[in-house]
Length: 469
View 1 (cartoon, rainbow, N blue to C red):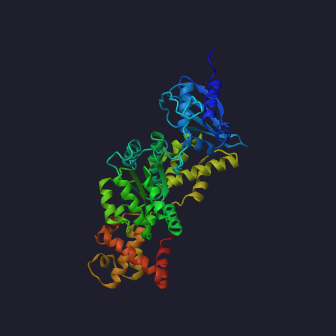
View 2: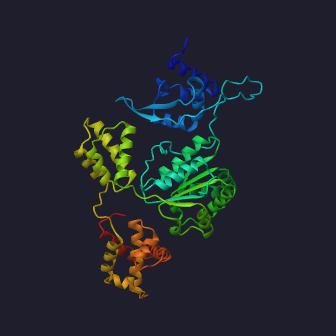
């Protein structure tokens, strides 16, 4: 007699139980509830009690689940999850699991005096990759602003350390999707190569770990650990601006991994040439790989992202509301997600539909609407007015002190508020090169630390922008 899908899932649990500890089984697998199996589409749907359980299963037990499902249900079966997000209101969301893979029946391994089990277990690695399993290529919507970095990132994930894109340096303004992209690379790489040691770390955490290692006199252990990584992903490296010893140690690790053919991925809010701490020898390494810019998404991409999120979370948002959100979120993916999450919360709490009135209310609180983005010309006008000089004076070759200070302050504020690369700022302020802009910013930063009257003067100029720091 042919077994029912629910009975087959029972067989899956039996195999899992033989290959994990009792505590692991009770914690992660016993709470799973079988919902349905569609033989035609080869879709298996199970319910899990929380998003945390879903993330943990996908991060540590995806290979084990693939093996048992392949054995009991057959190859190419897609596992989907229904996640309970609010038990009181019976709210759930549906998430797709990792792509199904063809897995041959595993051969029994030698377990000493113990009889081999039917299935080799996928033992969770000692190394936690620190990846956000929600940030995948599937949820990273492609558009004109990110097509190249996304394509390159996927190629790296499929062939880590084997492409010409090593190291891979991605940069762009806040909210454009850098963290999502580099996480997606790591997640995809772990799916394809579970044995590889993949690690995502923020620059700040790396610096904290380095400081702890110095204090405990365990620098060699710290370096050795990072030298064992196969795919190293470091986010927000611009934060190392004043961390000389951290940078020196990182280069030691970077150089070792580079020579060993390991994949290195770095993300920053500005290009390498604008990172003052970056050593020339590291810049040379970057020239061997790829430097890619992620631009802020345009309105159409924002609309596509919103449609994807609505579909994923089971939300119904009218098209005019989606258009309104896309046009007012200032090209920030982070703002888009924040607005949608707020709309969902308001809708649930007040038991109301999502309409334009609610969207305007949420947008007003969640997004700073900027009808007139600050430009270099705006900044130059304010600074020149404050010091009573003309833009022509600033653009001239004169080294007169009054003109130089206006030039330096304008460059400093332009980099702070416009997020333009230094090379572009230099072109707009008298046709200077990027090194002049970097030097000007450094000079202003140093003066702000020691000159309180100058700091107050600069604050007065900034207040005229009607912006907050």
